[in-house]
Amino acid sequence: MPSVLYPHFEICWVKKAVTAAQLQTAVTKKYITEEEKALIESKEQQNNLQTNLPA
Image (tube, rainbow, N blue to C red):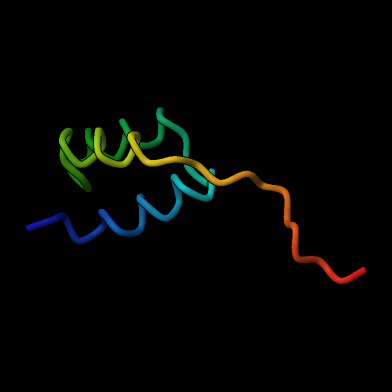
């Protein structure tokens, strides 16, 4: 069963709203596990450019 905060950190990682150092802090504070951190870091991060802005 995933940690309660796993989905939050996963979304933040994909959106580049959290760093690897911050994920490590989450592991240290037992918000997520080391295994979950590795899974999160394996996810591709989105480009911050918004392509659907009105002209």
